[in-house]
Length: 153
Image 1 (tube, one colour):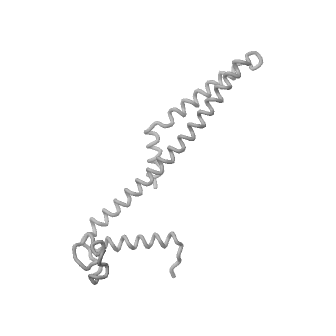
Image 2 (cartoon, one colour):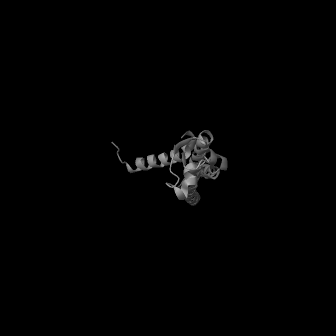
Image 3 (cartoon, helix red, strand yellow):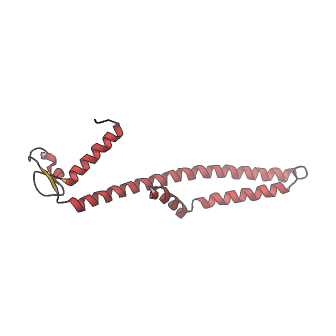
């Protein structure tokens, strides 16, 4: 969970998406400061010209924020998916490495006939159920039951 929160921020920092945003904010603050020094009564044209530039930069900033928010969402989504895929692959590799020869149960050979290779994988013994298959099936059933909110007595 720690990496899901901070990896997207690191990627965004690495891509320097916020540099242009900071530049626009800095320019707006400079223009507002310059506008505050000008008397609206004496130099109305210059004051309104600065106000138009400030309004234009504010619109540009809003557009930039909208674009950045979509980029941020995409980057966060990609990071989350890649981290979840990485954790699943790591989990499967761990189970395969430590339990690849473990046989849980001997079964009649005709029970899972078209998919018997999947039931016994990674073991090569015909008519057996491997720990990897059992682990995968129980995880799928547990997730299904968790998502369905079915209560088992």
